[in-house]
Length: 204
Length: 204
DNA sequence: CCGCGCCTCTGACATTTGTCATGCCGGGCG
DNA sequence: CGCCCGGCATGACAAATGTCAGAGGCGCGG
Image (cartoon, rainbow over all chains, first blue to last red; front, top):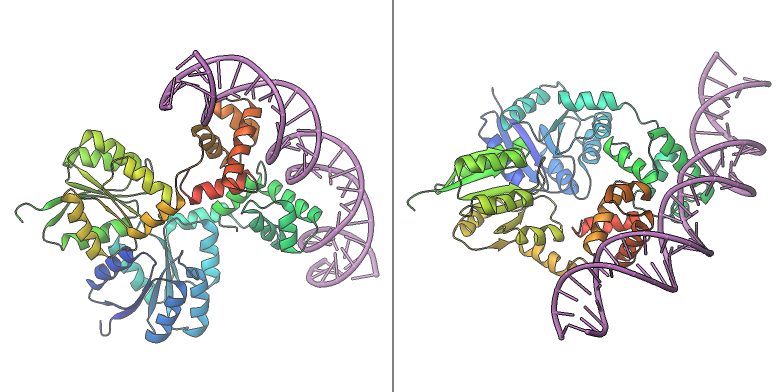
């Protein structure tokens, strides 16, 4: 155990981040070199400190964990990314993995486990929480086409068809068609239930 | 400082709870005597250990922090309740205060501050995060009547009017009237936007 | 006691949806 | 090359929603 693993912690909740930093610092082979409270800040900190492992919260102001991971992938290829999340939605895991994230764990793990996982990730292996993985597999891939997902996303705010049509530069009729097919594919009662379902599965 | 303040920590995120317990234990006058990961568990722990202060997360499985606080109020009047929350919605604060909660803080505070606030609450004072308080004041009271809120809540899942009517034991026409008046009061485009608004303000 | 606000319902109407059939275009694939 | 799929659109019809007017009952405060 020569040089310690240099960590970047990013989470918008001060309480959590501070507590985490303190706990991880107790581990002799881990060293927290930077902390951030938002996506952009995390990126800046990473550039400045070049950590070995970045522990990112999935939901942060500015840019979410996956977006930050994507940027890091090209800017600091040597830095492994580990995503920590409160409520893990299946789709997020998929997106994260696609972005080159090496680890994905829920906040329900203990600090002990997290430390181990950080070491695992730093060693070059991947680690995905078994339960989240199972969810992701059972949820399967999104059956929605690009446009269907796009329209569904716009519908999420409860906007009427006319507004969605305008914002998506589509005819109102087309919007209704997409909405309709999305609703059918998801087996939902109506567009709003469809939005809920798609959200739950992380497809939007 | 003769006897330490006995604490109950309740949060469904292991990582946070553990980290918090460790950090707060560093304070000489604070002692974590029990931990819980859900509403019911928190209640059981409180009964078993009779803590001086209960630090509860707002969102927990089973029963949320406010519900737990309400129960504690009658069962353990000596136990002061402090609510910690991730995203503080104005309405929640109001509900919490009405339930006899003594403190309400966002997770963005530092552990240091939290320790101080715990002491404040234990001493019998109240503490509410200034920013959340400002939000709550500017958001004002809910303009919705009991039934309007009730119906809106049922509508939140995207259920059709017929189902809402059945679940609320009302006639479909009445449901539509309530929905309509709620939508007007909130200045929303339609029921779904109304649900979003009411949620943001913590009125549902 | 009277009025007011809330709860409840009905009926009617305009508008917004959901659903379906149908058509055109363009890109990939056997 | 021909076919199918996805994107895009129209038109038409049925069903769900939003909006209004009106009306009876109940409880509370002036």
